[in-house]
Image (cartoon, rainbow, N blue to C red; front, side):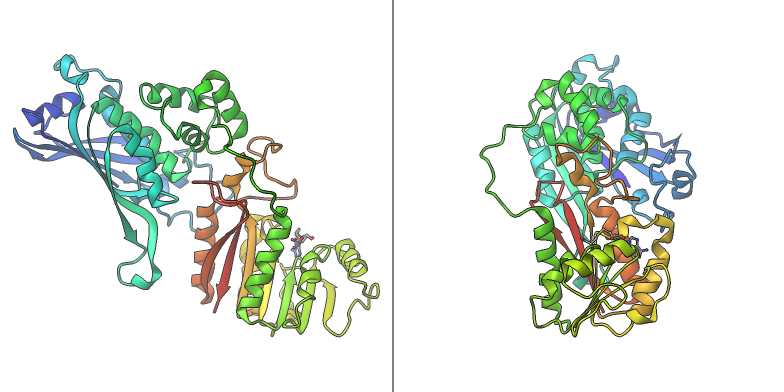
Length: 455
Ligand code: SAH
């Protein structure tokens, strides 16, 4: 991860005083999750560039030295994007390396600290849920913003762009504010933190936000993301800093169907689009999806499976089938079964749906489910939906930090779901596309996320 800061003040090398780092020296600093290096690739009177290279050690990060909160999530822990992108780890490095500059102290150039100077700031890879959000956040602060999406893999251009952007910010600003803005906004755009977030985070937000945050048009959203969607913290922040309150809703949104209806509609549509005729509903619960699938003659065979006998019986009753054990008619069949044991009855179908099921499995059991579904049952299309944890802050009644249902073993952010989906698709020879279900909120996404795997 590389952050460069350039200026053209006269003499430009005064940047060294402001940053408290001598332009002639390269220095390294150890911090909780790696090493930060500072040096000046360019230091002339006309232009001076300070470079901060953050070298994250993923092993150290995972081993708990940095208090990772990804403790529920073990797959691919050591292979992740953290070393390469601007995130809360960059914030730590900024604090460690440029701490005095962030505080706005400079006895050698006391006037210069209080003067807006021309700066050009470049970030090699800034994650963002959406490209336009980068400008939304930095333009109101007086920067001209240039963003270039980074391809997922330059060798495979058809894979498209990643959620990482090369970013250049140019403006005449106060250096210490610029550093504070990066300190807050990089993790805000990333949407995650590598450490446990508590009340202290509100103080940090207020301290580093002084002078620019409280009249930023997106201040509520910034606070929400900075506190990673923990409603109790957000409430507390708004209480202490009323400027962070949510903007009034412009108008009542039109009445739309409830989420579970939209979710079923989206799954039915994906299955219809796939051309599948024989479909599995894995973790079918009380048969809501099956009831809808039955309305479409395209589906000539529908097999619903659930581990819970009571659910299966209830589904049978609702679908008007005979009761246990003969719960089938010419198109529908229901049975108890677990996704954690290989089951030959699941083989030979065109498509499978797992609607709000994976989050009911222990994370340590996911790999077993993957084998059962993706390797052995192996339908051509697999549709998976799961809650988007980022959206939880939007539910009025959800206790902060809580999952939506007490039986949920985890809820994933969009990134976590994508990372999992990509890794499963890769291992079992599927490609995956993603869709959101429900009303989308800027930077948070939709309440439900759906992955459609195809091989
Ligand atoms: N798909 C339904 C139900 C979702 S609730 C709907 O959207 O309405 C999750 C369901 O997964 C529950 O019915 C639960 O019994 C089932 N389930 C949990 N673990 C399972 C397992 N190992 N195998 C099969 N089903 C499982």
